[in-house]
Length: 508
Ligand code: BGC
Image (cartoon, rainbow, N blue to C red; front, top):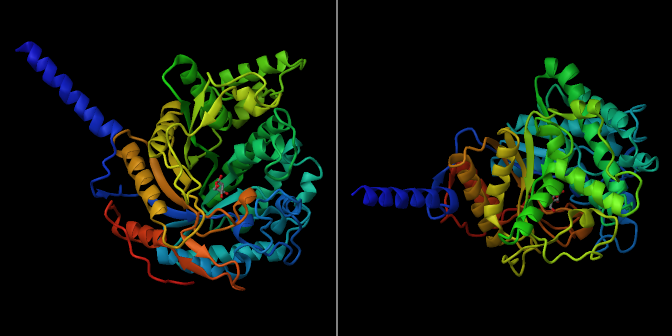
């Protein structure tokens, strides 16, 4: 009898774990948690255009797009979605969706044409001020990113993120914006996705500013950007929070990484890859000890020594710097798209350039058994977002997580059931993370409000809820079926697996 009871209890426990922890409840209609806010996001260079309007100076992306072969389809963000001219229409689209907030970014060279705070562009400031006012008048909260990759070219000419003085320049720039908009903006995001602009811009030549210094320049940028972020946060915390009462933090690309198999070598490779992918930027800010992840530090030191460098290629963080950076975010800004699986076994020495970030990671990555849909760009692996959210919760003592980007890239079309399916599956996993795992998630943001300039992919890849007609002078926007779906989700505050809106032509 005792044995049978134990057996039944064990079976029941397994069933509970399976139902709660492993399987998503995708068949069920789910209520959205009270208080969870919904938004949509964009970034200045990707949508604004107006690249030389008024006194704006070129950004590193204006320069980069001029280099033949850098952008897949030879396009640029010079005119993009023309939001600089037609921002009111963007607000109408947001209103149509019914979002709580709009995450947009400020173009540094539009506000400070020399890059420095010696002269503030009145036209630049007024543009953002009008946008903020328009949002507030429509009941939409402005959430502002200070830096989403469009550095003034003038500052790049002085080294950009590889120059430690960028911490001064960034703090000065942040002050200008806190002064100009902080009476109305209560949510500030200092930097968008450090990995993407440091590793791809300074360690590879796939992003601006095209500095190909693998395993050296990229790591210099990582240290400097952490210092710059911390300076902007401390400034807000000390001087502005007392009078403006808002929040300030960073948003980190948090795609998940794990071993491709259960072999100890692959599991270890997955863990180290997580340190490189996320921990590199999050550990210094969110961990109790601060500093870079220990295993990452050890790995880069070992590789550097083996390569004949007299010191590690990873710049050291002094004790004071560690203390200065630690704790400098009021929330964990979380951007997530997909998951990569790492194989230690497939890795062969000499397979990657040396030195380099990829060689330091020391494993081969791929999408495992998952495939990308024929018209798709993003690989759908919803279990990964739940794992990433839990990794952050467990590693950093359950911080408040604001999801600032999540979305699906494809090659176009206003009827986009794959995008809707992606959003449903990822939101379902997020609800599991909240309700079953206890992750503290306060915001969800769809990337992106509309199709836009997708960096090195140019206009070829689309992430928008609205299609943009780049042939039309005014860049007409058309709601995709995913926009209708997102609108229903927000209005009904339910995630309904059966909600598949029919396409109807709605233009802005
Ligand atoms: C960036 C966005 C980009 C999106 C889709 C993120 O890495 O922050 O600017 O458009 O991913 O690739």
